[in-house]
Length: 163
View (cartoon, helix red, strand yellow):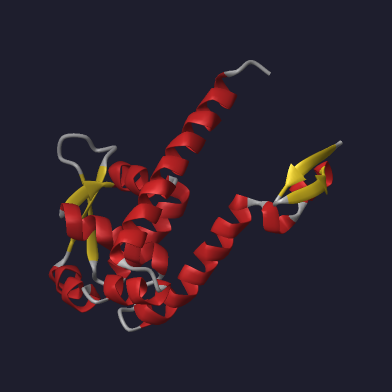
C-alpha cells in the first residue's frame, strides 16, 4: 500500500519511522524539559517530581495522598517515596486523617512554605528556555490538555471493550 505522506508518496511503512511518532516528540521534549529543570531545581534541592508535589502543596496547602496522586497522575507506589523524601528534607509533614485513618494528608512545613519564595523564578526561567512567547505557551498547553483528554477517553474506551 502506498499513501500520500508529508507532501509526497510514501509507503505505509513510513508511518513506522520514529520521527513520525508524536509520542516520541513529546517524550523528547519531556526529556529536554527535565534537563533544564534539573539545573534550575538543583539550588532548591528538589527533583522535578518533588517540585510537582510542592507545586500542588503551594497551591492547595494540604491535600490527601490520594488527591495528590490524582492531580499528578501518579500511583501511590511512585508518590509515597517522593513524599517521604520531602518529609525527610523537612519540607512537608504527613499525618493520618482523624476522620479516616486510611487517609494520609500532606501539608507544608514552615520550611516548605519558605521554599516557595526561592522557587518563584523557576517558571519564568523555564518559559525563557522554551523561546516561546506567552501566547505560544498558552496555545501549546491548551493543545496538550486536549490531547491528554482525547487519549484518556480513547484508553477508557479501549479498556471498556471486551477482548
